[in-house]
Length: 258
Image (cartoon, helix red, strand yellow):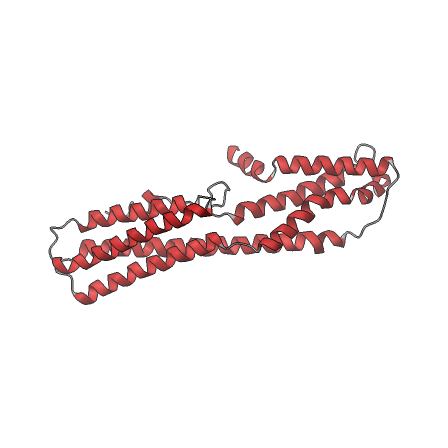
């Protein structure tokens, strides 16, 4: 029950209350002064619902792609650890432990970077992550000293390269989101529509029983603002606020490295 309520209040928030209140005031004012009009209903679907649904679908696809890239990152990291642990003929070395520390450090910096909303901080964290990748690359070269053949070292270096590519893909997904102009367009219409449609809602008062006149402006406001809130949560898949967010857990990544 608590989880259901938490999910509910993620899409029904203060913006819902504000827009609903303004739409009710607008409708009452129009009815009070006789300002009525029959606006076409299809305008809602064409101008608002379709762009918002398109944005939600786009954000969801980005989230799914991010999950795949995170799996690539984790999978290649685990493959490197197993190779460092099992391939050397000389088992008396500390390379596996150092790999675990580096993986934990990289994952921790990634989580910090992707949950940080200030882009000016990203560059410093990104440089730190690439320093860790550099250490990881240098560490793989030490495998030659413990009996790993050059061809096998080259294969492990390819795993490091694929981890870097996976990280860069995650960074791009985080930085480049749904077109800003489309989001701005959707938000403007979502927030002003229930207000400017006051004359239309006022014209429908005779179609409802007493005390039900404000059902339509309330429903329209709830539906449109809720869709916008859903889009906002999907738009930031790493901020760890929404129910569908991606959480980069360092312990989850290194827990299988035993």
